[in-house]
Image (cartoon, rainbow, N blue to C red; front, side):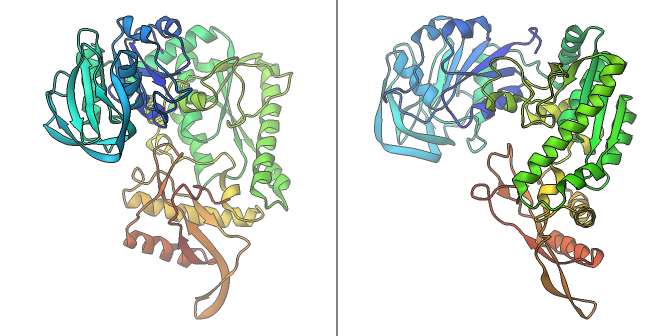
Length: 517
């Protein structure tokens, strides 16, 4: 991130929604990052934030060991906004009264504005907000104006404009809160004075400049998976350094229909990148022969991918003396693996696992400050094909973990046909961006009796698993129209003779996972 852009820091008090808050700030076209509540005031000041947001959290502010806000934070002159726990922590630190209400508020809650002030001045007198608390602020700190109340929150919002401090008891970052984004943007723009200049174009410009400075005239290697993250990372690096970048695409034979060809044709066509393709289908299928356990499949595929990439990297390194390795690490990866503290490592949840000692590369992670929706915006800005940018998330092990049973060439071909039909019909229905992911599962070890062509058959069942989600942490089953489901089922059983039964998975996450394995 360029220092030319203002920074908003989200202080995380253990909230489920810290990443969502950061995303909402960015949706306001202002750059944001998350820091843990253990960060000291000096550490926060060193980042030179334009504003600070205090997140929610699961505890009571007066509970033993509950995270607190250092009152010194509010003497720095940095505008600060509290949400839920952050709101209560601000009130408690500055001399307000916070105590148990006896009336918890969870979910949609009516809020009434007493006096709107700057923060709520553009809102109607009554609206509904998303609450999640058992404590409440009963008296605001000295100097604060009480703006709103609810049945369980005598003080549901307050502000002190002289110090640039404000807060609300509810969660404005949650989509169920009416006017939530407006409240957040009002604080950021009107109270904190933030400039709204964080855009996909500025991300590209900033990243290109940073990559050029980091790489100089060195050679760079990138492993392409076919997914949007590695494609955008490679395109950014290629835009910065041109022919200093070499990409390796390992075709493990487990991709969906047409995906390998798309990488070779479309990605190279748009970027002009130097691409080395390794068709390793036989290698992977040989290693997977006789294996049905899903976790064992994952480990085998990860191992073979690493070894294949290693072989290619050694050859290229001998030719070009490669210094850097590109990874498509995203900001949620960084946060979930400990906030990116310490030395950069090649993490196991990426396509490239641990590399041997004789392959020592410095890492380039051009997307490590971005969320998925921002990566897609950058990909669009770079001119990548829409079907690549908006490709549904697809697991690294590919179709191998969507085959329940042993992975064979025949079973892969069968599942590819079925998957292609389902995806094609979803696209024709205009639902690609409504449905977040659409796995199709082959129950390869199950035989189901059927009637096809006036004869008895013993084909395979397949499972349709459409889901909606923002982040994969939770997901709901996608409500596809009956007419669409009928078309998909009819086409599959007509066109793929080995399949005689189509079923629909209507389980949310939790309790079920998105993949079946």
